[in-house]
Image (tube, rainbow, N blue to C red; front, side):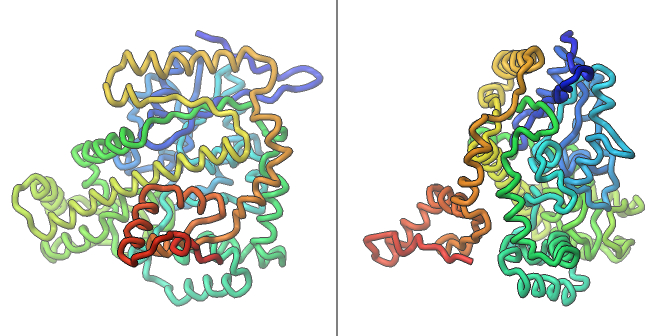
Length: 480
């Protein structure tokens, strides 16, 4: 097994080496991290924003203990599901501070820290000087952020007060307000608090910090080896859909039933996870119609397990029976719609994760090694996985550990990052009328959106229906 050389002595102290395995959901990140444990003395730090919480092990797809092969996993199912574990708190858990120094502890055991997860803003918070600033926490959207179509699922409590908060932010800083959804109450309060403390508009402060600090790769806290798991989109789509079906068979329905509460706030903690709010409509209808003896016993919005009684067990069993029944009824239709929505939102998550990784590579110059798992997913072959993923990844990590020079992003990135950021107009909001008022953030996202297949199809359809010879007018976005 490869010994880790992470020297800590000398006049010029080298930056500690860590491996970061990123990539979209379903691509094999955790599997690769565990397999690297056969070649190096590794310990895994979970960087998945939903897997850090206790509970919903099936829905969040945590690696079971018997599949971890003796590899220590940190920050996996470690946090209370009722609290918000921000990027700042993830950073404070992983890097040296007064209370905790996880990465240093791993290095002191002569082991290699391997950070694994699809939550890119966790990873950025750990290594980027910008996101290590205590003034601002996570600047990226949560991977399970609320879409406008899910707004009715948010907590109905204090609607007037929350609406006033958003309107207040919009009145003092419309640019910052346009960057977030009106139901993202945590971010709204964060911006208002930032303005109250500093007297500076959040958009001005954050734009300045972004342009000033993003891309300062020479200030990275660690010497990082970035490995990105990936696969073709059609293959990933099919795989995650099959995985959702497997989760249903493995107990996903029981998990969401046990945490269901009336008035749940889907903007906090574990309840943000894809696969929770999608079942709200079904469960509300299903439980209400299956007997007054099976009412929800708690009215607060915290994640608590209802007391399991005979009635609960019957309702859980009935869900499974109903799903396999050849007969359609309203509850079954709602249940199938919920499962389909989980699949749809997971596919959307894959695309968001991939876009953000490409952004880190193209815009900020991160040196990312891509591993293609397409063939191994299609074939379900351990041999192909070992040959096409594990072996090349092992060579990359071994070379990274042996070299003395820093495996940092490209040297040219810091020099033109400011220009690239300004060119992309990251704080300009575009609204595509042709695609149902879809919101795009920045000129870069707008240009990518215009090239997308679904946008082009809608433009073509509108052109035919309106008898237009040119699409130029249809593709003019509304800017805020």
